[in-house]
Image (cartoon, rainbow, N blue to C red; front, side, top):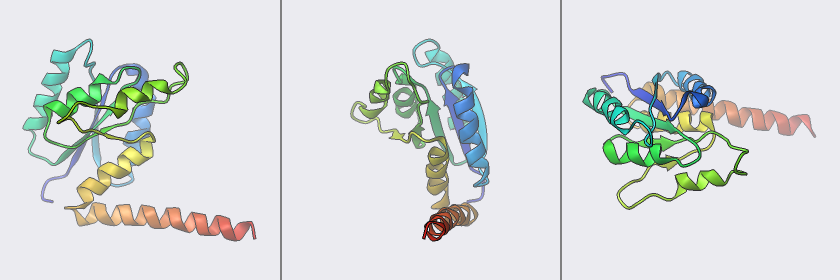
Length: 160
């Protein structure tokens, strides 16, 4: 990959910022550049479209990670407007007993954002996508997987 890939983290409101920071931190572990933006598919659709136009014009490889809870229109709206992969990573919610995640599960035909609930795993999926074409990112993913496996093996030994 000749151009450094970009992860655009698009949140529905500033209330999602802490969740987005977790995603950005996890992206850094794979050497991924991130930007964070705020835009609501319900309240500021034109603004979201302008953000998407700006990044779609950027020739770098990109993945969008959308963060919106309750009625997650942002993920489907984004996916329908871009050619790059979209990963929905809604923030956890206690208000609706987690039922609001259903708004991220079903999308109309032709709209296919992936759904990943853990911020670190959303970053991992983005890294795996970029790693298909970038050996350095692919090695970072493999290193992360090896560290995870090593910890499990160490934990197993520690309880024997």
